[in-house]
Image: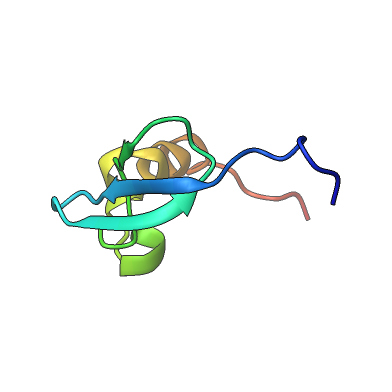
Length: 72
């Protein structure tokens, strides 16, 4: 690796949505990162479909294409 071109790694703290703090190393300029979504709340990891229902995308899709029938 070339010297002097890579960012410096330093210890930072991630604050999860429930307030839990975890320390790691990163090139991030700040000292802390407060997460809006993490593995405890994101539907991809929890298996919940709350996001689709909450923003009503599935209902909008069904309403828009409810009368659609393919031609034979």
